[in-house]
Length: 158
Image (cartoon, rainbow, N blue to C red):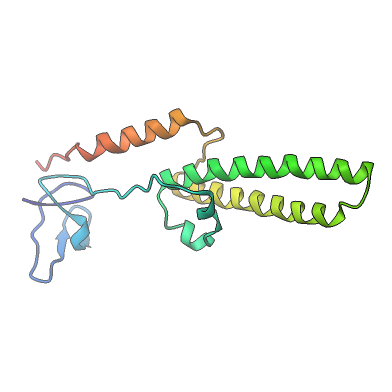
């Protein structure tokens, strides 16, 4: 039985591959139509790299919460490393001088990672009204477990 991927009620697929959900009051595309009350399949990317942060804000806005939280963790770690490097270069410059160019580069890097962290936090705020202050292995593992469990839950169509 074809069901709506949002509410789980039975829908009838038209010849054009679309269906209309009377409860949600909207047309459903092929990817929104599920079988027997199954939830929509979520594509979760667990392979997150720091280089992913160099994507544009609009590209990052298309990513799922798990990806964004994982990336935020990497960006915060990089920001912290660059901050510590900036302090070290700044101290060397005060003691000996001659580090002005390096200090300028490190400050620019720090600003980049700080801004990227803000971008990720704000995208997460828009998606779910909050962003995690502390991101641990346990948090990410729990998220993946919940995603896996939800895949197997159906929505009762009665």
